[in-house]
Amino acid sequence: MSLAKKLWAENEDLAQAALTHPFVQGLRTGNLPRETFQRYIVQDAFFLDAFARSYALALAHSPDQQGIRDFFELLAGVQEELRLHANYAEKWGVSLSDVTPDSATLDYTNFLLGTAFLRGTGETCAAMTPCMRLYAFLGQSLAADTEHLEHQYMEWIRTYSSPDFEALAARLEGLLDRYTTDTDTVHIAYRRAMTLEVAFFEAQSEGIKR
Image (cartoon, rainbow, N blue to C red; front, side):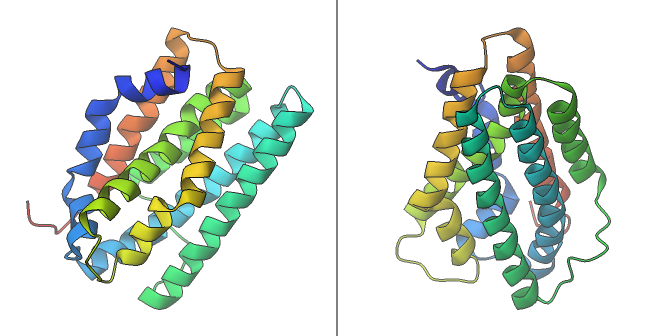
């Protein structure tokens, strides 16, 4: 088993916690309150900006040319995701300028940027991979449950269940396996990112009926 698969398996409890979270299930059914999704778009756009910067730092610290090419192309993928959020913002009537991050968003972005700035390429991959793999998992899981449905959040589900997004997640996992050694620090970084993912969904869920 690769290290990326091992880390994912170790954190299955948090993946399931995210999948069953009322926010994610609201995306599945289409019943997520509009204002909740609007808040999510704004916070996630702020997060993705930090995620892109973390890729840029990983690129700068990459020990070889292949890594430079891989991180560059992954960075381009985040830019495409940010364009999607700009479209969401226009469609849902929210502004992405002068965003004030909430505490959960700031905790996550500070963790990512601190790791990417201060730690090695391998540990940066361990901090970043959970976001990509979790969203691919959520998208694919929700798509399987909504095959014959059509509602306002299907675009989100299609984006994260797409083969293109799966390819990006798998590519980052490949970088994790290439540059990371199996240490306690790596396991802690991966677990921390997964915990912050669940906390991020929780922070956006104000007003959702439990």
